[in-house]
Amino acid sequence: MLSVLPPFLGACTLVAAAPGPSTVLIIRHSLRSRRAGFATVLGNETGVLVWGLCAAFGLTALLAASQLAYDVVRIVGAAVLVWFGVQALRAAARRGPDPERAAAGEDAAVTPWAAYRAGLGMNLANPKAAVFAMSFLPQFVPSGAPQLPAMAGLAALWAVYEVGYYGVYVWFVDRLRSVFGRAAVRRRLEAVSGGVLVALGVRMALEG
Image (cartoon, rainbow, N blue to C red; front, side):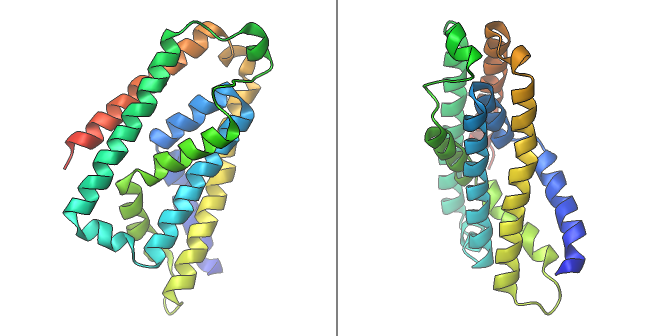
């Protein structure tokens, strides 16, 4: 197993670096507060772990094999993306946050638990994440190693590694809070993230 760790972690870095809806949501919630950002990361990585364990047990193969099941998850996922996007656009359209609350880095509308559920829901609603886990993890199982425990271990390592990776995003946004915390900047970022999420949701709904 030790021999596969360097290429596996390198691949995990490339996967995490690829922009996607989860990254957008993490950054958006990090603008609200550091706790909300980290909670979103933990929710997203719980989803990564769930899909990884499903792949280890062969359950994601059922999703890949059934067009109906895949389409159902795809449409639900598209609706989730559009919902989050609309929420961001509505936030951008509203007036800026209260100065004292913004200075304290708080936002009563996004609690850590709500952010965690949002991150988890975003990941679990993406059928591509399930199919990707099924094709990604087996490539790094050493020859002769027991498939189930090896894939489960890799899934756990993948999730833990991404907690650290995306934690850097949260830290970076928090360090630049003096810039990102300005009402005008936050409204623009909310508008951009909302537009991106809506576009990704529409694309997911339209693709077969």
